Image 1 (tube, helix red, strand yellow):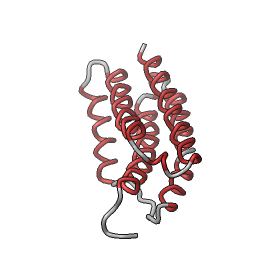
Image 2 (cartoon, one colour):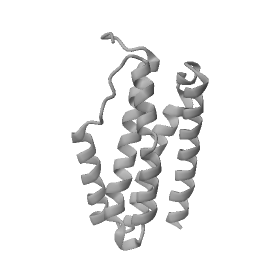
Image 3 (cartoon, one colour):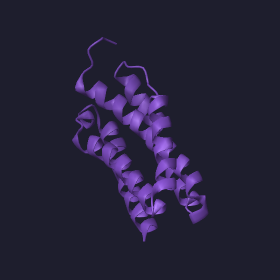
Length: 146
């Protein structure tokens, strides 16, 4: 592990952090949206996203890096932002679901542009599975908005 990270090392850490952040965010927003009966679908999306944590921790380790956890202050700010949205928005449900879509878009963009798949076919398959998960989540979130 050197002080200067390669693009692959940085991408693997960023993807891992965003996987954890989005799963945590889904769980937090599930609690806020329970009154709309959205807690079960959001919790299910979180559970499916969490299935990628261990495999991506292995990718990070394969690149001789230490798996990192998201910044707890950032996650707290996201949670507070969700609560503020719930309190101040005229359509809290859709506003929070839009925020979930935004968070997923950040991860999807990184997955789409990373070169991590060049490491091995196994890593490429994992990236493809994560991309499929993100597409599925997008469809579910958009369906929940209607």
